[in-house]
Length: 243
View: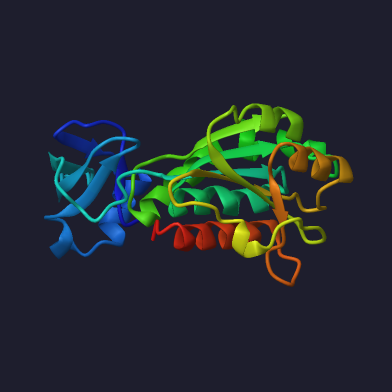
């Protein structure tokens, strides 16, 4: 937790002793560093906080907002389409997406995917949002990725609209462009489609191609969905000088 995410912009705040953020401050952060903790609000400002304990071991914070700290100021112009996968895979992707600074995540039910994944407690209990916030806290920035769900790839692509963007889909078996052609211009937004755990169907491949997605491969090996996600975010960040 390199950044303490708070719920509001108040200058004086109290974290109850049972709050995980208070526990982290008390048990992980050395007391000599309590005079200048990095804090932020989701999609809001950042600042420094001075922490102290009261007699009940609650953590009291006095905050100076709008202070400049080493923090990502805006999400990168990247939307990632992901075939709905096992909950444990999606948990990793959610946390890492926030860490990478992805602007938008769209999960969809793929032709070969397992429909029951959408009924996981991950999505029904709000756990997914907790994971996103953990990614922000680790990476030290405040811009929460937008997360949406669609019934299939057709609805997903229709949601993208007509914005000028580079569109590329990654496949293990088929390509119509070389990998070096997939990264596009640094001046454009990017949409990256990553196949589900069981791969694209022929119908989905044709749908992607008809909707201006270049199809390409990501290396010479078959990667797990979460590994492919991290690889795509990494290469795009380097090629487009986001890093």
